[in-house]
Image (cartoon, rainbow, N blue to C red):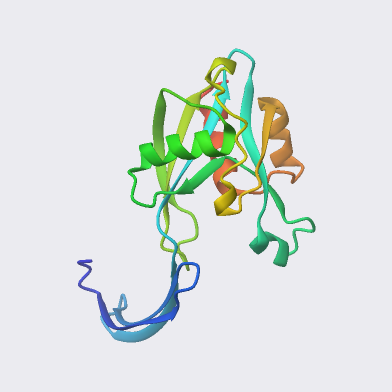
Length: 193
């Protein structure tokens, strides 16, 4: 942290239950040179990785469907969300993380993963940076059922969808997850399928 226009005055932990919620009081130098004291909350849940599995021969993608409580309390009637496979890095590097998560969530053991970009998904309140990957898959890479880990209370449905159907699901509001939309549009722009 080397921005000369920011001086952190105080950091308080508001919650350390699931992840960490901080309240940070700081001084910020505005464009006119004046200093202003501000306070913001930042939720630190660690960094993550996400991947789009695609099969160019069959023009299909692998996505997941799972319950997401924050979407439920914000008006998603069922709380179910169709997403690209993803997970927190924990102590892994992004590539190792996404290989592990792919196996756990989808049952596929992918061999050639390619990082395509990284992005902050909710920079106004969450510290997480997300690493985006793509990888081809085929039926012979399927080594398990997927579904996530029981001890993590994951209950993930694995979906194999035609690529055109997945794109249409963005249009009609069935896919509303930001990382998934970005990866599907990346695949469309770069003609992966």
